[in-house]
Length: 254
Image (tube, rainbow, N blue to C red; front, side, top):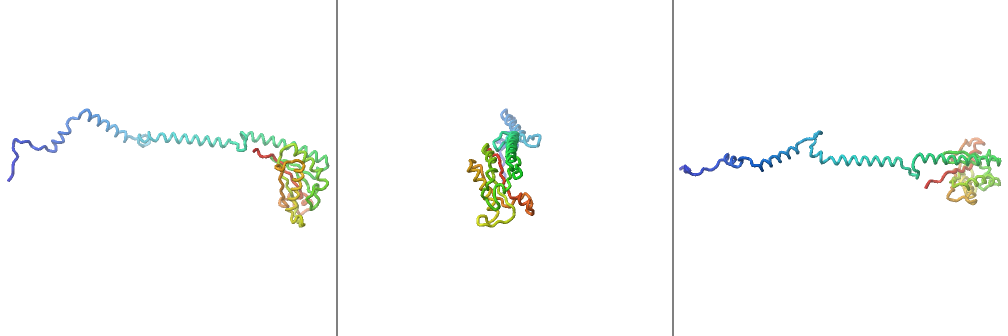
């Protein structure tokens, strides 16, 4: 049996009634909140010129500035390194000037010692040459040593005197190099040309040190027949290959 609701009693609100009741006329506060939400939404979804979000562009702008700064610092370090002088000189131009002055000084030494050798009648047995930063004095072995020997002969002191005077006037380093021809030697003292060439270089070094040249400026090297100047097939070639070279050079800057 159906029961009818009283005609005059209150009826339950429908869904539309509830929506209409709660919506009503927007208040001022609601309007403010709505506008703020719309503004935030517009910022979030607005795009920059490159298609990225404007907010992201603002946040990433410091990265570009930071990378530019790093690039400038890197360029600065490269320029400083390119112009740095690891040998202590201020710039490449100064290095070239120092090298030119060194060569000029060695050239003067070359002229002086050539004149002394020529005056002593040794011009044909001594050859003085100049290379960048070095003065080379080539002595034929027979003006210092007898055949197969490493002890100075009687003429050696006359040959070494101009060289000793030259070295006492400066602090040049001296590399003494002994060379032989390819004719084998096999004696109790010199089993091969290596021992002979090294012993001859040592004899020159010992003479220089005994006469006041500091040991730290000297060194002796034996090359045997490994660095020939001429063919060993001829008598003249073998004679040219038997020699003692003195290589004079400036000490390192440090």
